[in-house]
Amino acid sequence: MTVYGIQPTGYVRKPLNTILSEIEAQMVTEFGPGVIQTSQSPLGQINGLMADLIAEVWELAEAVYQENDPDQAEGVNLEILGRLRLLNRGAEDDAAFRRSITNQGRARIDLQDIARAVASIPGVVYSQVFSNDTAAIDENGLSPASVAVAVIGGDDEEIASTVRLYVVPGINTYGNVFVSTSIDGFCRTIGLVRPIIVPVTVVINVAVFKDQFGCPPPSPAAIKAALISDWEDTNINGKDVTNFTVRSLVEGRYPNVQVVTMTASRDGLPASSGADIGFIEMSQLLPDNVTVNVVA
Image (cartoon, rainbow, N blue to C red; front, side, top):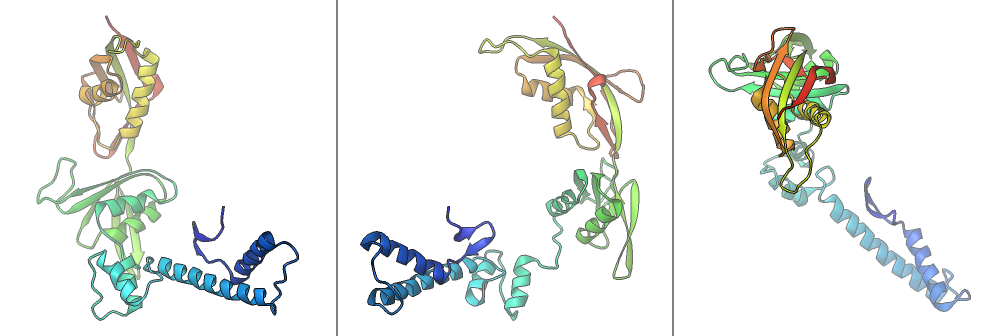
């Protein structure tokens, strides 16, 4: 595979001496090892001319490639890239307009940008961003015009400093952990939701039958393992363990399994039809706490 052209590291231009060597090798292949192609010979002069022309094509291809990169494009080509982001140059020079295109030194404040930034912090294994854009306290307890960032793993100070870059002044941050941050001498306290892990005991009774293709149903152990795995994959803080949330996972995975009854309990309380999980909490289903029974 060629090491020149478009590569993971960018565009790699083929050097002139490599081009000339390849031409000379082709001449030997066509005319034999005795062909005279020294730099002063007629064929050597032709080889040099061809190599120069081919090198110019490589330079042109590199220039075309660079014009699609805002960090390398200049002039009109930079303005074309700017229009892709609905940006007009105005009075900005290339350097300033380039920073506008790439958002250099600027933080975007959409929820997905906060989520992406927090998720990329070393050690973070779970993160979720919530916002309350209304004028009243919402169902999660968030005050009006506030943001809550729920995180498991990572360093408190690093997470808080990252969140501060994306949450503008005047917007509250909700949490059960509060971290003081300082940027350029300005202090600001950032709230983080550090979910409290709550083990939940679940007992489900299921009816099983062959599917439409005649395939046998999964075993209770397989149903249990699938439920624990799917719950972990879809779980977020504040998600209640209810008949609906459990049944949707089990029956969604196995069309030949029907959840007949389900009970759940937490903190040693009596089993009931579900376990309520607070916004600053996160349920956990462990193998020792999940029972699957097959009923007739």
